[in-house]
Length: 241
Image 1 (cartoon, rainbow, N blue to C red):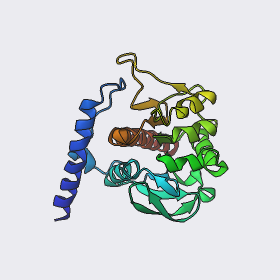
Image 2: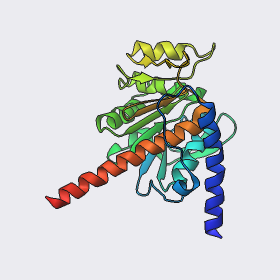
Image 3: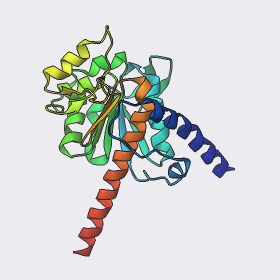
Image 4: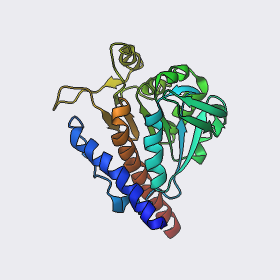
């Protein structure tokens, strides 16, 4: 019965991922699609991810879709916000923050993912949020941000000279200017002439909003998987010395 449920979950995740991959023609970095078989391999076993959300008005699907995929692959998720306790999503989702941002020790995690939504503006200039981003970048671990959250990374000083994307509308056009002010490069696809929906620059990955959440989650998982493989190879070499 558990196997049937696992396969059903895998298929539910894969179908939208495949649909997203076909529609997202502005991503020139082609990634291998995750299949149901891949999901059942638990490729992210022993991988620990901290997901950073706003206390109020984080974007529900930008949080829920990546978390569901990461956990289906075996990763362990810890949620961090400004303070511990209940966090309220823009669309009504309630999530318990396991840690306050000041308590996050990136030595204990393999990557940090910052979730967007209008509430993330409260973290734009938050020193604790900046410290998480800075430590993740310093350690060369996977650092992700979606929607408006790349502004947090930019203000933390980790996007200088880095090609990224960010949520942009008439209302939120200032987000583009804010990341540029901190030295980030707002990347435009040569193929389409449009901003990227998802942009990977080394171990830093950004996405421009909820419609890119599935693709973002898939690509973050790919980076984490590669990071895990490299770490395992390094450990084996150390053992052989």
